[in-house]
Length: 141
Image (cartoon, rainbow, N blue to C red; front, side):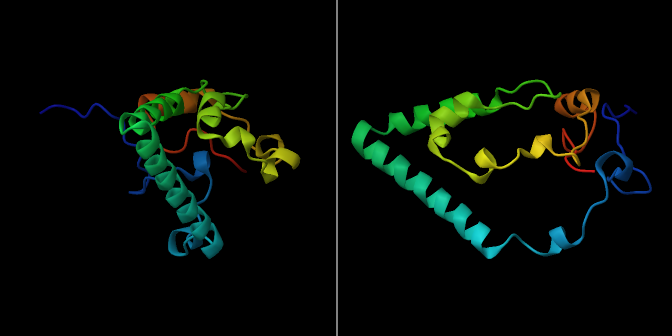
């Protein structure tokens, strides 16, 4: 019989490592997001679909496909996990997110807060290669 090639991180039958990722909240599993947040996300999806239809009618059906390929390529390009987060500048310029002025632009960045954990580069690379489970960077303490 062949041994499995992945290492399972199960402690007590749960696939949750509380020491590494922190405690999980039950409320976030039961209750969905805020109604305004879900409406905002669905409006963004509708806007993207409308933009694709307009581009297909104006420039032909191949142009939105090319933009989707470019978006997939640019969304994969990231820095290795570490102290400096990936800015995704190419993806932001393609989607037009550079023109948006959000709350994070004039308030303190989430990565600069005092409650932010220092990133573990070894764990981030383990997750990326498939040796470990969980988020690449556990965000808050």
